[in-house]
Length: 332
View 1 (cartoon, helix red, strand yellow):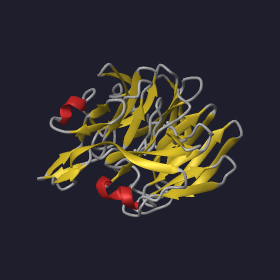
View 2 (tube, one colour):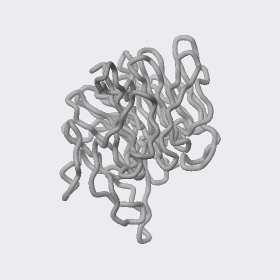
View 3 (cartoon, one colour):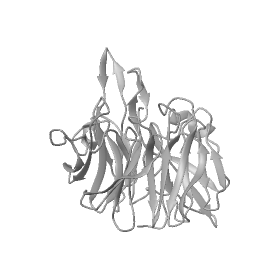
């Protein structure tokens, strides 16, 4: 893993938001991926499809996933592909299908990167059956979940965030189950209720510590409410931050948890000493949607990539690193 990490801020109106974005001293922003997109009502727009999770692999390829439902002409659209963009960014023109990677999946979320594998989650329209897949060379292979044997409940109902600990164990946040599950590297269940809390959705991990973002009393991420971020490690479980509905989060090389606040339109850096600092983007923007921007921190007059990292996981659904993923918002 490269020590420097890349922060992507996905903006609703990327062409105009650059002038409105407020950055902390020493940071700059530039468009990383853009093109001809589509607004929610079907009209042409600037940008790429609304991105709820993203990650970089070791070669610098950017993977993004769109999740959620779109209603048009009385029909529901919630079957989305995974996108793969070349290192250095891209301007999408013409046939966007050339950037597709792997099969389209319902409510797709990019969870984590594990070597050459992408770990992704998906769940059905009724939020009653979910799957954890690994995607290798564009092929989706079942890792855990799916249709259970007759008479048994499903392992997953609405799996979303994914994270890996130092031993390679897999953690999956299931919003409908109200639990974070712990699996071994092969996908076998170690603890189906490793952590229980209300509406867990996003995960990030570094070493022996796992952070869990939950929607708490908020029935859907786009509604106003009070979210929570919990820190779990050798010293036990504690509430790290209360308030933001998290659109994405990751751990920086310095150990800070970097959080995209969906409704506050800002990025928070949560210190290990239970403090938090924030850098706010323009009020008109949201950190985990539409075309990607990257921020840089300047050191000694030279630009270096900002200190934040993210596959479901270390995307801000705005967060990412060159070797791990970010998780973004779900639709409920």
